[in-house]
Structure formats: structure tokens, C-alpha cells
Length: 212
Image 1: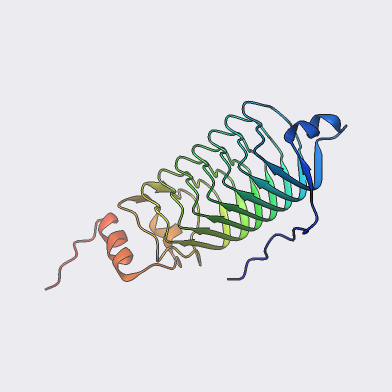
Image 2: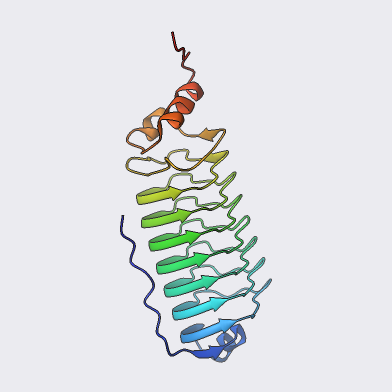
């Protein structure tokens, strides 16, 4: 699966999130934002394009209908943020803390999450294509009623994740780990798993597995 990387320029102008208030519409483009906070703030329909965001905090921020294109997030903290209705295209999140983020009704295309902590996130009614989670902590994550196309979970912890009403056809989880998971036999059809995982799922479905 090939994911299109963010197209970020080499020449970017420094900015802070306070610059969003100087615009009639909350919009930032061609900027680099470092060590700036939006903790607890509420901003609707923010648009970010061609930006690097590094060491920034969005804890408990409410950013409904956020629109992101060609953005790299590095070492950021989104814990308990409301990002419902977010639309993200060609973006990467590296080493970000995303505990309990609300991604309800999100739309992702060409997005990667690498070494992120996303336990207790809610991806309810999410729709996405070409999304990679690599070496991420995703315990107790809710993927209820999602449309996941070209999705790979590589080396992730998916323990107690819930995929209720979410078909996993062609979704790859074979290098990830979990002790339990909520998913129906119907939705599991076509999921790419390892042999040990297949045994786990069989046991979860109540099969009596014996060697002899």
C-alpha cells in the first residue's frame, strides 16, 4: 500500500496559533508552528495547508470541522481534543499523544500515524482511504461503523479495540497484537491476519481448538 506523503515546502514562515485570530477565517498556510498551544481553545472550521507543526499542544481543544492538507505533526499532544468532523488529506502524525481524541465523522486520505499513543480514541463513523498506523498504542479504541479502505495496522497494540459494525475486508492487522477485540465473524471476513491471530479469533468465536 502506497501512501502519498505530505507536500510541504522547504521555505516556511514561523507562526503561532494566535495568528489564527488575526484572520477573518481561521486559516494558516505555508507556515511552521513550534512550541505553541491551543489548550482548551475552541475554533471552528480551521484550515491548515502546507505546514509543519512541532512540539505543540491541543489538549482539551475543540476544533470541529478542522480541514488539513499537506501537514506534518511532530511530537504534539492532542489528548482529549474534539476533532469531530475533521477532514485530513496527505498528513503525518509522528510521536504524538492522542489519548481520548474524538474523531467522530472524520475523513482521512493518505494519512500516517507513527509511534503515536491513541488509546481510548473514538473513530465513530470515520471514512478513510490509504491510512497507516505504525507502532501505535491503540488500546480501547472505538472504530464503530467505519469505512476503512486500504488500511494497515503495523506493529500496533489493538487490545480491546472495538470494530463493531465495521467490515475489515483487506484491512491488515497481521503484525499487531491484542488479547481481546470486539468484531463480528461477518465483519472479520477478508481481514489480513497472522496464523496465531486466526487461532485467537477462532477461540474468541467459541471454537474448541485441539491439536489432536
